[in-house]
Image (tube, rainbow, N blue to C red):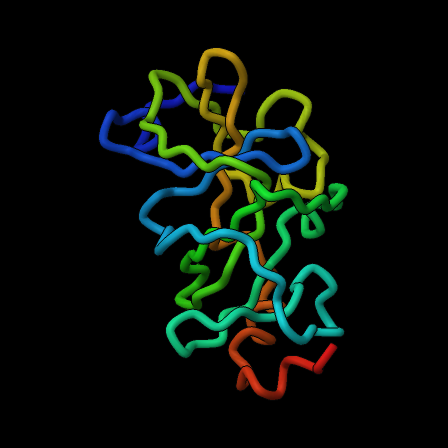
Length: 166
């Protein structure tokens, strides 16, 4: 795995880091709109099992993606569970994550691959880089690669037709 110098190693690069079932992940802070406490989504999308439903934010229906389910990890909801409201391919979506979310700056070294032990995992195709933090690496998710074209087209459909009442 080659170490690189890129935006990820620049001191101005910031990312929101979080945990999913004990593993460290992050997303570019430029994609984050806000972070809210977890609330149970309404409705469901039967064609995409990791989209939990939607929440209303300032009158807009926002689909909620459970990243643990997306990456085939065991979902667990606690009082610390949060939803990151983020931009994904010009769409707004909520990302359910475990616990505390920190904003971190770029580090001195990054590797253009998922962190050690993460290759051939369900998230390896959407992780752009592993940023070394000292104690462990953080897999930085490229939100452009998080969803397939088919999944994005489902999000483009009118919101009322997507969700079935639970």
